[in-house]
Length: 266
Image (spheres, rainbow, N blue to C red):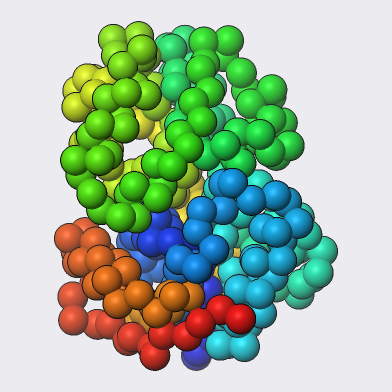
C-alpha cells in the first residue's frame, strides 16, 4: 500500500475547486492542502517572489511525505512550475492552467472572455497558450482583486465588482474561461452579470485526469482512507471552516477529515 500523500497548494482556498475534481476520481488517496493566506495575492508579485514562496511551500509538503505536488494556482503554475521541476527532479508536479485550449477544441467560433489574474495573463506560459489557440474572438480580462474578494466571502462587494467589470460583455460573449481557481466558486454570480447561457471552461477536471495518469505511470496510486489535512499559513480558522464547508457541499467528503495543527510559513 502506498501511504504517501498528494500535496496541493494555492494562494488561498481557491484550489479547493481543483481538489474537488481530483477527489472524484481519486477518492482513496490521502491529501494535504496548503492555503497560503500569508502571501495572498500571488497575482501582484514578481516572478522571483513567487518562486521563493512556492519553493518554501513545496519544502513543507515534501517534509510531510507527499509523493506528488499539485499547483492549484494559475499564477504560481505560470511563473514557478518550470523552476520547481528543475529543482525537484524526482517529484512529479501537476500544474493548473487556464482551459483556453478547450475553447479552441469545442467552441472556437464563439466570442470568449478569459477571466484571470494580472500575473497569469502577463505570464509567458499563458501568452504561448493564447497565441497557439487564439480564436481571434477573445478578450483577456485582468480581474485585479477578485480572488481576494472571493477569499473574504463578501457577496455584496463581489456583486458590485462583477457588475462593473462585466457590464461591457453582457450579451457579447458566450464562453468564459475561468483562469483562476477561485473563480469557479462564483459561477452563479458571474452568470447573473453575463446571462444564463454562458458556457464556462475550467481546467480542473482535465488536471485531475492528468494527475491520475501520472500516478498510474509512476506506480504511485494509493489505496488509503481518503483523509484531508488542511494547513493555512496564517493559522486562519475561518479558512479551514470554509474549505471543508465547500467540500461538504460537493459531497466529496462526509465526516472524514483529518485537520492538522495549522502552521506558519516561515
